[in-house]
Image (cartoon, rainbow, N blue to C red):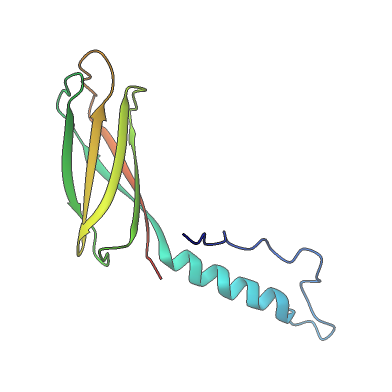
Length: 124
């Protein structure tokens, strides 16, 4: 397994401008890479009202987000949260994200209506 490096830090030891007043090449390159990376990542909010989930049970749902392909990355969070719940997401088809919520607690959990947030990143 190979690990992809995180986005490189800014070149703070280099001057932002060149002698002629234009942006230095090292900063211009870094900002270009940052713009390309930012276009790959987005956060989507979806209103959701999850039914009561029994102890040891789960719930799943799907939402459509244009531009996704199988193999893209998806993570999910839900507000309001509950410490007994595990939330996960996966791009399961073109333009489709499936979200699973599993109750690992000893009693049923009935969340109030809230917001599901998906962080989506296009795979290279």
